[in-house]
Length: 143
Image (tube, rainbow, N blue to C red; front, side):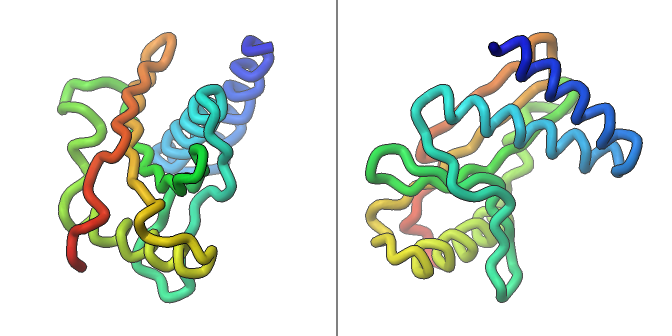
């Protein structure tokens, strides 16, 4: 069955490359791979590309792992020539993720103690390389 998913992913990616900016299409391909990766590991993905109504940030994937609400930032690159993809998550990006996460948790009535932020780095090698950092940064940071 996994070969069927890979085939569908390739076809979807080719179609996006014709219609979208190449960087945007690559980012969405990374999110597709991350979504499938998390589901294979028992996560239940409940939202993609969540943006709070007030703006200021986007969460790539929102998932449950047991009783923990996990906000996942996905970073992808074609290769690691310029370093790992997760190097692009700076303090400003973290603050935006925290704001969006607080908004989502508040709306879903999830206590902040049951929230964590993960980071998935994807390199588009063959097969793609995925590095998952659970609890990549603390939820105790102030905004």
